[in-house]
Amino acid sequence: MRSMKISKAGYAFRYLLFGLMFFFLFFPIYWTVSTSLRETAEIQKRSVSIVQKTFTLEHYQEALTGVDLLSSIKNSLILTVVTVVVTILVGFLMGYAFSKLHFKGKNMINSLILLTQFIPMVSYIIPLYLIMAKMHLLNTLWCLMITYIGCSFPMATVLLTNYIHDVPDSLEEAAKIDGCNSFQAMFKIIFPLAKPGIFSTAIFVFISVWQEYLVAVSFITKDEYKTVSVALKRFVHAHGTDWGGLMAGAVLISIPVVILFLFAKEGFADNIAGGVKG
Image (cartoon, rainbow, N blue to C red):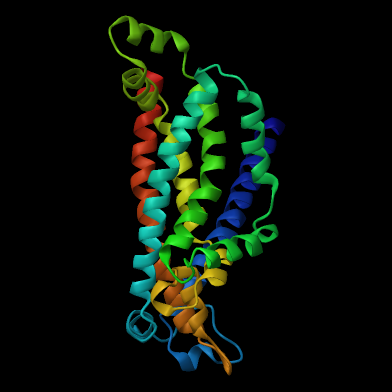
């Protein structure tokens, strides 16, 4: 009987803890969406009610038309998609080389790539700015694209090297015995088995580029080339902050990330199941 009471108390404490965690995780999302749908008069009150009392879509209209957030979303999508594709391709090839091939200086090169991840972006933002200025690439998407790819592929290489290393060499050797060359074995055997790691790395790179602010605000001053993180700054004025528009913009730029997670979750789960089944 005593153990049953302890068990019930343990379950109650566990559910209480989960409830508190859910509240702290969900409440910022609720507050962002709720604020974006409230009228400006209600937002500017000294004591704002948790429960929404008014409803309007004017903040979304302002974000889409007045601030032209769609143009910034298009810029960020172009930068993010190109960066993810190039980073995954380069990272996969380098990860394969570091995990499956043997060549002189491999450990030193691998260590140098890993070392770049310990250098903060703020320490080389000025040299990068001077380089882009010399190449006349400032205020173009090219300067952001080059920087994002250069900063993303080292981490992608490190992550994919670990995933590819876990693939048994015997599978690749069996494929070569059956007539596959190195590239065929790499993309027909190694690539499918490393898909969970590729999905995880792609999500990591996507979010890192999508929310990046320091490089974008330093290299871009023209409105037509600004990314979503910089575009939200337009809601901050000299006389105050348009909280309704800011929250509406935050909701809009979160939609691509949510869609990515919904699709990537299915693909990631299918590849995990397939890998376990195989």
